[in-house]
Length: 191
Image (tube, rainbow, N blue to C red; front, side):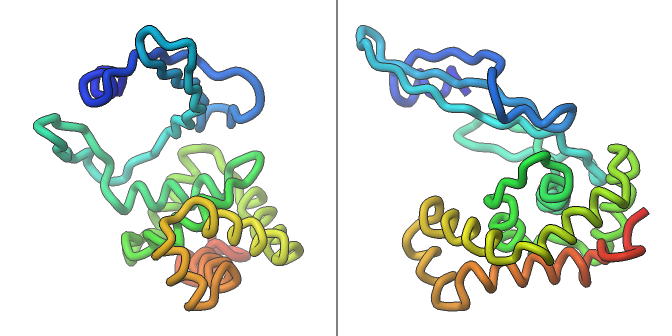
């Protein structure tokens, strides 16, 4: 990434392991990306989450401006959002919004694939049930947090379209339905 930033924008930069809150154990690591203009005293520091994705599909490749990047399948990426929703110590509501936005990439067998991934990562059924109970007990908190993501992190057109179609409450209810009914993560759905 740093060579591309240098080539495109002329910024120098560095990357180091993050310190402080945000480290999610074996599945997510935080690094600090720092960028600066040569000769300038100012500097921009950005924390970046690096998430381990368990892939059920072979790794593919995508290209951008002549560069070839190994890439997980769209199904593996959206399934990793489900794993993040269940497994993070502190939920990131952007994961719920991303699952809502990219749910079309779920496969008919994503529930079974996720059960295998949970097992390989050592994520117990209790963790799944705990998160689903949290959604049931505190829906207003989650709706408010999703609303902040929709308003503050999405492009204005996307945000307006989500608001026109039921807003953050619709996002929340759709995601809970996906988790419990489509992916069958409710009681007895994952082992």
